[in-house]
Every structure is written in structure tokens, then in C-alpha cells.
Image (cartoon, rainbow, N blue to C red; front, side):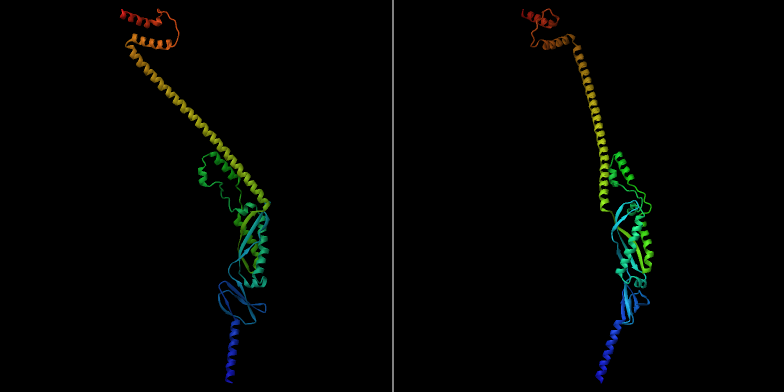
Length: 332
């Protein structure tokens, strides 16, 4: 009898342990639990972490995440207001704020993601198709520069700066809304439709924007053509600047050469004048000797290697005649 009593106690303890384990459930910091009984919600959701209890085998604990969840949209083609087809990829962050409504409507995360697809994707499409392309890629009319500031400082030609300025002004657009405001519009359009599911969308963002393949090729070609045109403008301006520099160089060279020639001739003239003064001073002391020396120079230039017949009475041969006469007197 006593053995049967111990067995009964053990069986009761085991049953009590099973019942305890079946009735206890734990909630951590990232979870929230809704208790249901035969499919009907019982009590308020359990959102605080800790150990809780329920009626075993009758009530069920339905766990849902309490932290922020990710939604990644399906990329697709969307036409903008200015009839440009772009490839848009979006994402969003959301969380369950009403687990009871969430359980009654979508029941689980996969169904919730499908609902988000059905609501956020059309909101993104509606907002983008209502605005121009520039609104999806820029937030403001902040000035854009083709060259870095340091490169602009290195550009010395004002004409090249003008070309760059014209290019920048041509590329300026009037941004009225901006990308950040568009994402807020997407959120404002999607959120009211998600309230009944107990879902709160924290934000919707555009991950990537690109042209579709066909438009992308034409855009690339246009960009290349524009860059080539700008390069040709700058190249022609550079060639003009080079011609101007070469012309200035030639002009400066001629001025230097003419100045040097003028100075050289002036120095030569001053030297000849000084030499003439020296000669005049030297020969002026004995005019007869000067005449004699000059006649000898003329004889050397005129009679050397030439067959000339002159009369001895010629004035040209006066000094030779005088020399012969003085030589004859010495001989006698």
C-alpha cells in the first residue's frame, strides 16, 4: 500500500510538472504575445519581458516581433511626370504596434510583407508618376560644380571659366519638392491603409534610381556628346590662348632684337666717333704726315696687283716722286 502511495505521488508530481511547463511561457525583449482561446483573443497583449502563465492545452501563445522589421520593395519601371522611364528600388522599416489587430488580419510576418507589397509599391508609383525626374534624385537647388574648387583655381583663362559657368547654368534645374519630401509623401499615402493591420511604417526610402536600359544608352550618348562639345570649346579657347602667347612672344622678341640692334649701332657710332676724334687729334699735329700715311694706304689698295700706267708728273704719285728725288740726292 505504501509503495502504491509513493507511485501515486510521483505520478501527481509528474502531471503537475507537465501542466506547469505547458502553462508557462517566456517573453523576451524583442517579442510580444497574444493569448487566444479557441481562436478568440483573451486579455491584453503581453509586451513586457518575463515569465507568464496560461491555461494549458486550451490557450495558445502567439508570438510576434516587437522590434523594427525590414521590407524590401520589388524594383520596377516607373514613368515620371516628364515622361522619363526610370528603374526604382525602394525599402521601408516597419513594426507591429497592435498585435491583436495584426493577428486578426494578417496572422503572420509573410502575410504582412505581402500586404506591404500591395500598399507601399502603389504609393511609390503614385508619388513618382506625379513628379518630375529631378525631384527623385535631388533634395534642393544646391549649386553643382563641374570642376572641383581647386581645379577651378588652376584654370587661369577667364574664357574657360565662362564655358564652365555656362555648362553649370545649363544643367541647373528647379527642384520644388525634393527626394526627401517624396519619401514622406509615400509614407503618408501608405500608412492609413496599414493602420487596420496593426502595422506602423517608420519610413520609406528610395534605395536606387536609374534609367531603364533603353533610356540609359541615349542618356550616356548625350552626356558623352555634351562633354565632347565642352572639351572642344575649352580646347579651342586654349588654342587661342596659345596663339596669343606665341604672338606676344614674337612681338617681345622683335622688340628685344630691335632694341639690341639699336644699342649696338649706337655703341658702334660712338666708337667710330671716338676713333675719328683720336685720329683727328693724332694727325692734326702733323697734317703732312697724315696726308702721307693716307696716300700710302691708297697706293696699297690701288696699285697692288694692278697694271696701271701713270705719268710721273701726276699728283697721285707725288710722294713716290718725292721719295725717288730724295733717294737720288742721297745717291749723288
